[in-house]
Image 1 (cartoon, rainbow, N blue to C red):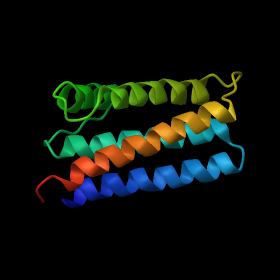
Image 2: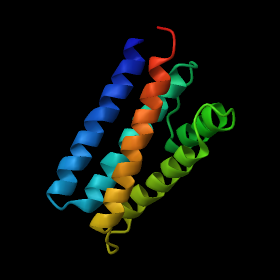
Image 3: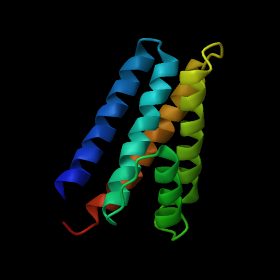
Image 4: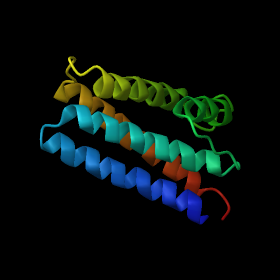
Length: 128
């Protein structure tokens, strides 16, 4: 696996670990952010296999859908989970008067774990 792709994937796994620890300590809103970033880094790793890099989150999300979901490589539920996690991260970070429940954070974290696992499986099947 190329070093840049491996670095994105490792960052995704560390973000999942951080999200789990944050949720254990009852920091649901911050766990949502880390869970989203796990998905973001995994999506960035997948896009890097095609020589694609982006600066904006919206660009990564759109390109992931275009390159992997529309083509049938990755099931559409993962595009939906990525988009939802992005929206919830924004809500958690910028709408400080709104709370994110522990249950919602756990749901997003579980989706992030599945997302990262699915992308990791795809990456393992790619030539080095």
